[in-house]
Length: 78
Image 1 (spheres, helix red, strand yellow):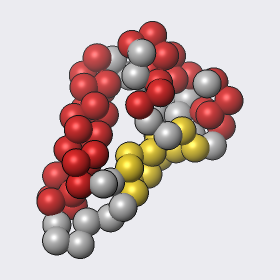
Image 2 (spheres, one colour; image 1 turned 90 degrees about the vertical axis):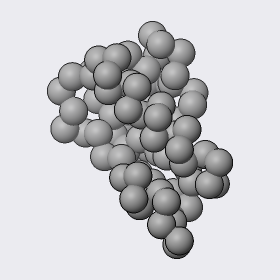
Image 3 (cartoon, one colour; image 1 turned 135 degrees about the horizontal axis):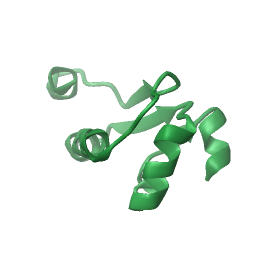
Image 4 (cartoon, one colour; image 1 turned 90 degrees about the horizontal axis):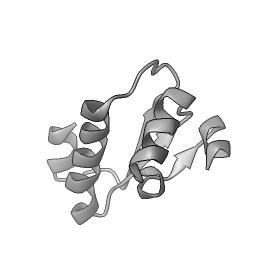
């Protein structure tokens, strides 16, 4: 992912399909935050696609929910 973000022709948006994620702990949250911190200065949006409750709940409890655009079914948890 880092290589993609640092490429000359980096994308303007990255969509992470999280629909198959069964568990999210603080390590997973840290990866998402680090990815966003690397992407933001380059004008790249990091969107979470179809996050299940196992992802939505930790994001909400940690206060990180509003830092990411949410697409699909998980958006209803906002």
